[in-house]
Length: 213
Image (tube, rainbow, N blue to C red):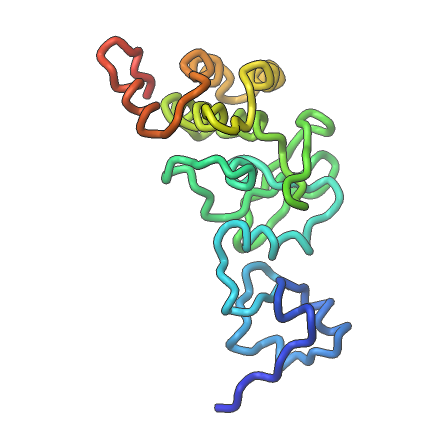
């Protein structure tokens, strides 16, 4: 079987939309090539490129519209905070601020956000929910223990990604939303200056700890 025709630069080194490929002169047959993966509808990427979470987010970025941002567990991972395995995103979390449409489709978990209610930042070129607010978003699905583990990871001894003041402010913004009581309880158990998940779990499992679950 002959080798596929090389893609024009820079399509060979990054995710690209079908529209981009057509504009560059790539035919329909080439877009159906076995060497191209389809992480999202209308997006192609060379199969040789690994599709870990950050790669999937890069593949999603060309489809992002105004008012759409990465959120929830995906935002936390993009901030490079380790998540408990159970919470690691399988699909990419994309949230839309009202009135933008909720993202749909294969490989995407869409969310709705009230306009202006949650701060947004840019992380390595990606529009993402601010770390503390992404942590709060997880309260709807995470246990109190998992929230403490993530919270400790945000406040590591070396190069902390947040601080307690910002976390308290985010929890206050989350008041009235699902999981708020769990957030308040978890924040009371978060400790700055830890070095690892194992240290956090050892503290939570100590006989004199409240042992949140």
